[in-house]
Figure 1 (cartoon, rainbow, N blue to C red):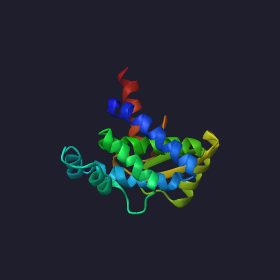
Figure 2 (spheres, rainbow, N blue to C red):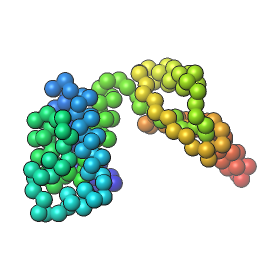
Figure 3 (tube, one colour):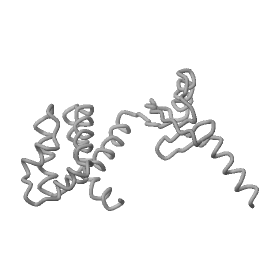
Figure 4 (tube, rainbow, N blue to C red):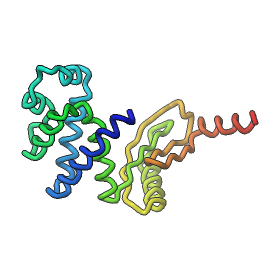
Length: 175
């Protein structure tokens, strides 16, 4: 995995620089997400490994219908370098670079139950205050948490779940 990230990094940076120069962060993000989703499909990844698949066919397979000529050239460069299987990693790194440039923190709130809109707004406000940036929050439900929530904002993870508290209590009692 770390080798894939190392190989993907220069391509993600190049895609980001191109999108920044074009002023097209969102279209590039959408196009990369589409291409990464297609490339991650096991049937497509097996096809990408086939040496008989031509560059133009690979680009046609992975490119969304609405794409810029620059994005098609980017996919062609990836195809020539045999890096199309790295598209999921490239898309993830691109999104990180975009979030940093737009001063946005992406956070995932996983709770035991569906959160009410007021609770989610309070969490967003607290995260905005803590990071000093805008916050994009996605939610997930995991009943195994029993209660509370886990907030994952990149390098920062806040575990306020009952499951996490019980685990910390168990560790404290064992020591």
